[in-house]
Image (cartoon, rainbow, N blue to C red; front, side, top):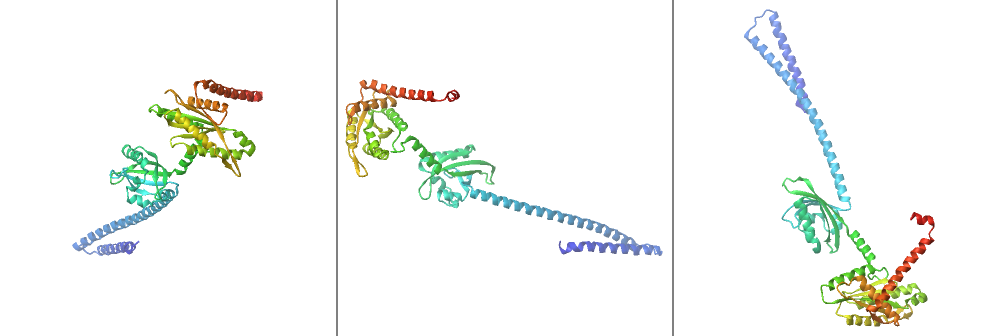
Length: 423
């Protein structure tokens, strides 16, 4: 409280005392019989006016005290609110800056390639892309320029749709970090209902680094479609390649050939030198197959010591036969296993796609039948499929199916009755 405020009550009290004294003296004059003159009337008027002024002043002083009290309470409440807002802002910033993702605020800007100008980017972006947050804020074209060229068109189209439609942004694409590495990101953003003073729309988003997840998915997919020992395509992937090659053949003038290779006497290697030596032989055979084929051809391991090769573009059976002869020569080259050398042979069956209705399963069955014909003729040679082999091919497939059925029936008979009934 200032000095004038403290003195006001005292002055008001003194005025009341003076007025009371004046009124008392004027009254005594009337008692003494003094005549009531004009000056006495003036005195009474002035006394009344002064008393009214004192009453008003007292009321104003009371109002001022109450107003000062309310002002103090409002000021204290405002200070508490500001402190709470500051604490909340600090907690929010701490959360934003420690979440394992980059948080950003974007403002619509048609002059920028992706339709938005970054107003804020959290520090995590430096760990993801190697750029400081302020670099993206000061240079609006830096962000779209770092999107992978193969993904840029789709990513920017998603941004434009987000700004124009107001729908949430959900996009996954690659970016190029400062050191040139590819980084997969998951980008999700939502339009905020508030508009800025400039009238531009605002969007708040979250950017998550998904590179490790993408690598894991790619590795799992690779493992599901490749042989774990040799790294070659497995049966599932090989069949898909054959189907694709047949589809391309229907649009072109070349043919498709499948070679089915079975290593001769491979069981002897396993029995005499052990399965470790057998695995090394399989890996070396896979390497030689990979080196022998063209870029568009596909080698695969079917199972055990059986391999297949897809020649996706051949002009005729002569070209497929020439490749089989060369492959047999490559296989006969010695394989070193420690201090020993072994020489492997193989039997190869060749099948070419016939009419346009040929499917992958037919081509594989034909090549398999031709391989068994080559092995029956003395091993270390090749055979080209012909119609007379079809019966042998199908009978083998039927025998395998019968064997599986018999094994399943035997397993079922060996189960306790309670388990069969439960199944």
